[in-house]
Length: 90
Image (cartoon, rainbow, N blue to C red; front, side, top):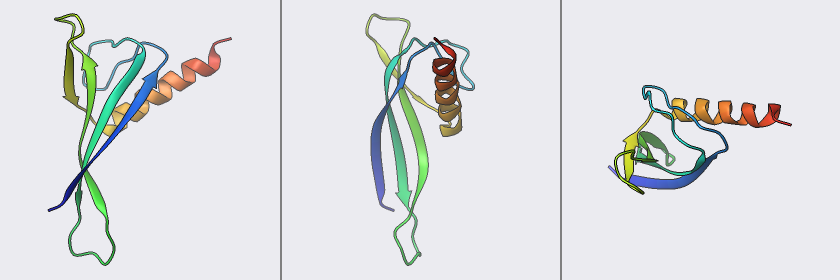
């Protein structure tokens, strides 16, 4: 199967958490990667997401990073909560 990798970044203005992770992460811009595989047998090209990861700070070492697999719905919820906090600030 053919796979493709999409890289993007997301920015949080406030501290945030992700579902399934108890740790609070600081505001900032984070790299996100989505791996998708091509679906075979269709008359048009289509892809299915197989993995989503985010690069997060690791609390152990200064400037250390960790790559964590996440549920895209958890990322969407965290971004929505951050946007809501932005809209209520003066």
